[in-house]
Image (cartoon, rainbow over all chains, first blue to last red; front, side, top):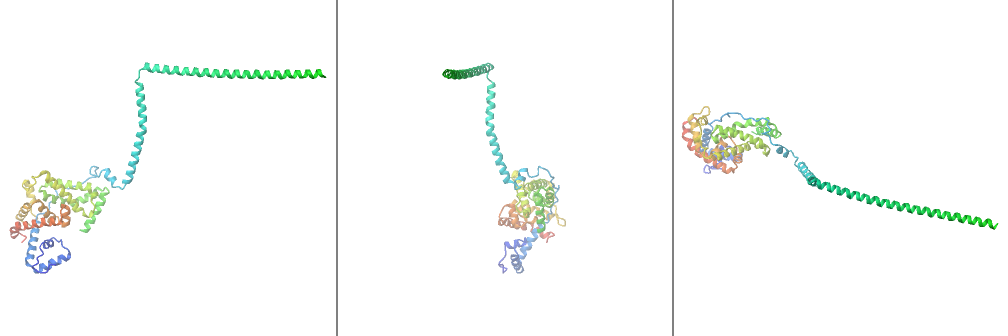
Length: 191
Length: 187
C-alpha cells in the first residue's frame, strides 16, 4: 500500500499511466500523486512523451486487401474433413478398405501364376506339342481299347453263363417230363 | 471494446464455415492497423503491404487453430510479428532505416494535422535510436494500444520483459524528446 510521498510507486506509476492497474492499485497511486509533486511531474513527463509519439499519424493502406472465394485460399479437403468430426468413421473405412485390398491381392496371386504358366506353355515348340498331343491321344485310345475289350469279355462271360443256365433248365425240365412219362406208363401197366 | 470482440468472434465463426466475405469484413477492420504496425517495424511501405497480405492469408488458412476468437487481435499481430521477423532474418542486415527510400522517409515523418514537422522529425529520429525490440514494444503499447498480457502473447515473451523493454524505451524517448517538447505544441 502506497501511503507516504517518500514511498514512490515506481513502476506502478508507469502502469498507472498506461491504465494497467486494478481499481485498488489505481486508487493507491492517485492517493500518492495527490501528495507527491515529484511523481506528479514524472507522470506528466510520461504523458507528454507518449503524446509526442502519437503525433505520428497512422497512414492509410495504399492498397486494400480482399480475398475471393478461391480454392487456392481455402483449407484443403483434408483440413475440412479432419475438422468435420468424421475421423472415427474415416479410420474404420480405412481399415475396411485395407482388409479388402489385402484380401483381393491375396486371391489374385493364384490367377497371376496361372496366367504366367499359360504364357510359358505357349513358348514350347509346335513339334513337341504335336508329339505330346499324339502321345496323349494314343494313350487315350489304348486305354479305350483296353476298356472295350474288358467290357466285351465281361459280356461274353455273362452270355455263356446265361446259356449254361438255360441248358441246365431245359435239361431239368426234360428229365421231369421223362420221369412223368415213365410214371404214367407204370400206372397204366399195373391196371 | 467488448462489443467489438463479440462481433469479431461472430465473423470468425462464419469464416470457419467457409464464408470468405466474413473474412473480408475482418480484414477491412484490421488491415490499417496491421499495415501501420508493420510499417513502423519495417519502415517500408512496400514491405509493410506485402507482409500485410501474407499475414491475412496465413490468418485465413489457420483461423481454425485460433482457440479463443476473442483473442483474434493478439493472434493476428503474432502472425504479423513472425512474418516481419522472418523478413528481417532473410534480409539482415539490410533492414535499417538508413536504407529507406526518400518517399518512405518523407511519408513516415509526416506529422499529424496540427503538429509541427520538427516534432514529427524528432519523434521519428528518437524511435530510430531504439533497438528493434524496444521500438516494437513502444509501437504495440503506444500506437496499437494493447495490454501488457496481449503484447507478451504477440511477442512470445513474459510480461516483465515487455514492461522492461517499454519503460527503458520511454526513458530514452523522454530524454530525446524533452528539448522538442519544451519548444513544441505539447507544452
